[in-house]
Image (cartoon, rainbow, N blue to C red; front, side, top):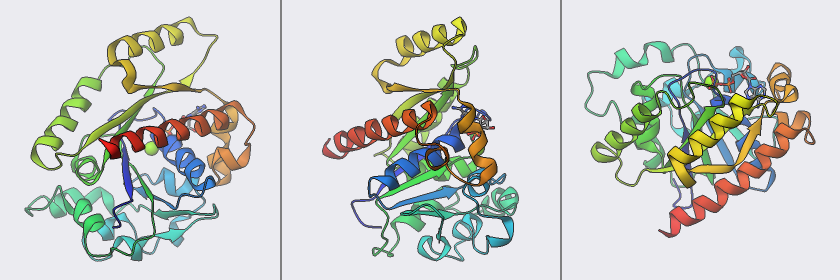
Amino acid sequence: MNSQTRIITIANQKGGVGKTTTAINLATALAAIGENVLIVDLDPQGNASTGLGIDRKNRELSSYDVLMQTASVDEAAIATAVPNLSLIPSTLDLLGVEMEIAGSADRATRLRKAFRGDNAASPFTYILIDCPPSLNLLTMNAMAAADSVLVPLQCEFFALEGLSQLLETVNQVRTALNPALNIQGIVLTMFDGRNNLATQVVDDVRSFMGDKVYRTVIPRNVRVSEAPSYGTPAILYDLKCAGSQAYLQLASEVIQRERHLRAA
Ligand code: ADP
Ligand code: MG
């Protein structure tokens, strides 16, 4: 992997908090400004693959093959309809991969090896990894492989629940596998300004996590939720909607932070 590549893992062990939506739209925003972006779909449900219009029958090689070391990152990556955006799709094979690799010494570093192996010609400048809703071996692989972790939190009453466990996992991965791992940031998702509770949640998360929280808050937006059924990112489906605009803003914050992290 070339040394300019930034690898960001999008993780939260809760389902339905906006991981996949963030992966797809952040990736599209980065691709739109000329970055060469790869999404790795590490969720057996394959929502990132479907949301980018890649049907199950077009998933010949997948993240499973990369984890099983039968395909390289460059071999498994396929083009999407979005310019500058490639995808390593997921298949249901991923459901069994934990058991298949549990006995091997490199079980948590397989993805890291795949990225940092000798395919130095890889063209990608950003790699975003979309994790399953679990702190399992797949998520550990994603954290071990990454420069930073980006955490989507849904603006709801239990938003902070589970966050300390997630941060503890990041610490464990940092200690055991990947000393350079950073927190990229925490993004609040599905914000509904008419809901007082949502505003309270934003305040609580900011006072708890300080400037780890991005200034950008992603609003709840029907266009964002419709886009995946057309197999296209919200940013292409409706660039002007509030959700797409928020993801563009988030991308610029992410880039700024990566510059800082890289300089540090
Ligand atoms: P996760 O990957 O964490 O399980 P998703 O990104 O799949 O979460 O989001 C869960 C559901 O919420 C999906 O149906 C998605 O379309 C919807 N969703 C995500 N973000 C928004 C948003 N900003 N506005 C409206 N719906 C959203
Ligand atoms: Mg998902």
